[in-house]
Length: 170
Image (cartoon, rainbow, N blue to C red; front, side, top):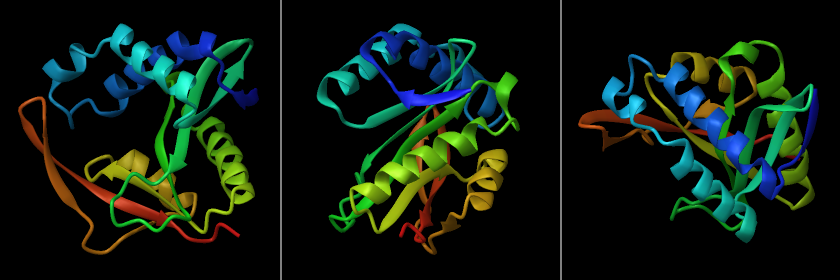
């Protein structure tokens, strides 16, 4: 497996991983109609825009030349975040590669780059009901931020997400 910066030509593969991962990871959490309606083409367009603007930064994990996961990271999008706070915007791995170290390798590669730009703290938002994801992030050193849980609507359902914080950046 290799971790490297995503290129414009990786956008389709990143979108495919994104959609497939959502459909697997969020089954039973996000309404099935919403998951079935996810569009690789729409996700590809948004990842192409990210590639053109450089925000967020995206790393991909490749195995045998195929993209099997990605991490997107950059400045925190939270309005209350200090300037030196970074955010993991997304981290997804194909379910066939879960528990194989791909997600951890992507996270550590992103963390290394965030250290280089002086981030003092890294946050991310995770669905409260995403138990597998929460276990992964806890094992990676993230902790829930008290009183950060918020509710939002997605696909006709009310979901909750919580902000996780990694403070040992240095």
